[in-house]
Length: 399
Image (cartoon, rainbow, N blue to C red; front, top):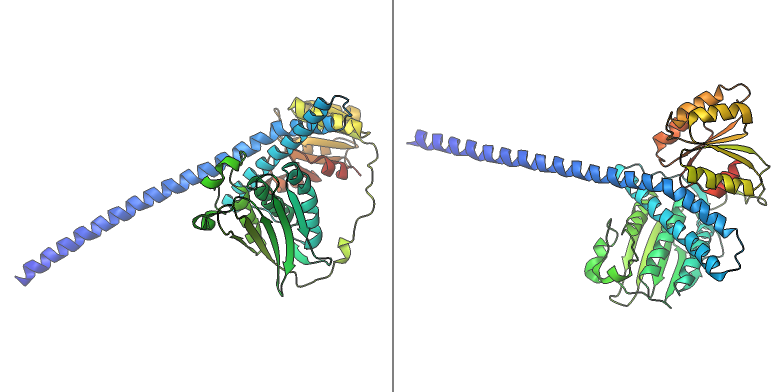
C-alpha cells in the first residue's frame, strides 16, 4: 500500500513539475516578445528622430536668414519670429527623441568638464527668459555670488535646467511666478525650480519622471509635448551621479523640482578654463558643401556667403571630387549619406587629391552615436557635426 501511495506521489510530483516548466517556458516566450517589441519601439523612435533632422536643417537655416532681415511690414517681422521660435522648438523635440532612444540603448553621451555651476545656471536662465516672458511669467533667479564647481557636462546641465523651466512654464497659467535657485551643503549642490502652477496630486508624484508621462490634470496645458522632458532630466541627472526630486502641496498650489549634484572636490577653476577673449570673426574661406538635400545645402551656403565666405554646393560624391580638383576648397562639409558613395569614402578619396592634404573636412549627419564619430575620424574628418547644424559651432570651426 505504501509502495502504491509513493508511486502516485511521484507521478503527481512529475505532473506538477511539468506544469511549472511549461509555465516558465511560456513566461520566457512572453518576456522575449516584450523585449523585442521594446527594442523595435526604441529603433523606431531613433529612426524617426534621425529622419526629422534632414528637413529640419533647411528650416532652421531659412529661419536664421529671415531673422537677418529688417522687415518694414510688421506681419513679416512677426512671421519671422514665429518661424524662428517654432524651428527651435522642433529642434528641441528631435533632440529629446534622440536622447531618449540613447537612454534606452545605454548610449547617452556625457562629456565631463570642470565647470562653474553658478555660471551655467545663469546661462540657462538667460536662454529661457524670453520663452518665459512670452508666456507671461515672471522669472526669479536666485544664484550665489560665488562659483560652485561640479564635474559635469555643461551642455547637459543647461538641457536639464531648460527642460525644468519649460515644464514649469507649460503648467503655470499666464502671469505666474517661476523661480530658479541654487544652494549648497557640504557635499552637494541643489538646483531648484519652483512654480506657481497647477500642482501635482500626491498619487501622481511617484510617476512624474516616467517616460511619456502626461498627467490627466495637465493634459490641456501639455502644448503638444511628448512627455519625455522630465524623464530626460532624471536620466541626465543620474548619469552625473545625482538625484531628482519633486514636491507639491496639491492642485493649484505649484510644484518644486530639485536636482542634487555632487560638488567637485576641487572648488577652484582649472587653469585651462579661463574666460575666452573677444569673439573672433573667421577669415573668408572657400567652402564646398556636399549634400543631396538641395534645400539644406543651399540654405547653408547662403548663410556662409552672407558671412563673407565663398560657398559652393554639389549633390553627390562624384561631383564633389571633380569640384575639389577645380575649386581647391579650404573646407569641405560632407553629408555622410550620399546617393553614390558614403561620406566616409568621399573623405578618404578627397585626402588622396594632390594638394588637398591640409583641407578641413567636416562631417555632417543625422546620426550622432559614438561609433559614427569614430568612423568619421577614421575616414579623415577633423570635425563631426549633427543635423540640423549649429551654425555658430560651424563658424567656430572656420576661425
